[in-house]
Length: 267
Image (cartoon, rainbow, N blue to C red; front, side, top):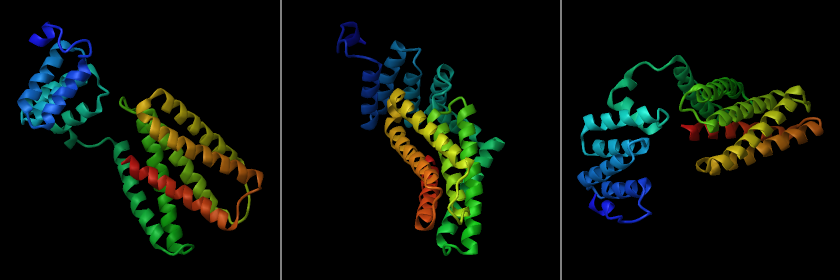
């Protein structure tokens, strides 16, 4: 406080500067010192949700659950979208023990079934009845998983546009991959043109998101390239009148595996 009154350390002193100092102390195990530094930040920036969140984390690290809850409550009151504070507050107040909403339970159930059926499908011989049955279960559960995930991200107060786009992209990958396996002859339909439109729209949305939100840039630009590639392959297949033989199997496999990869990393 004396240094601040004297204008030290200077203009570079800011909320993030003080917060970083607090976390350095916390990392060294100097919990009480870290708490005092975070309290200084609260005094200077009382309207910032982040300073209360950091103070709550420090109190929790020091074993003071009551003060941690108090600061997390202040964090959520200022910014209800602060995920770390919301989750910690739920955990500390045991509200996570309440029953999940039906949509969340459906989403979790679909995810578990998708993972188990994916392992089964990869274990059985390609083309066998068991492989086909496991694949159909995987297809249905992945549709439910991606659709419910996109819906939850769209309506939830803390939902992210990235989750909506990735949910739609996963739905598209599973659908086009399953349709490819169902076709024994080279053929196309209106659904393939819809697929091109969906993939291109997702790619454009991810590029825009990456440009507007630097924290998502890496993931957004990577999957926008994948979506653009998928759209280009769809268009080439349509112009060629369908896909057969080894190309059909490759198309089916990479789309199903890409959808599974997205589902796993989303966890």
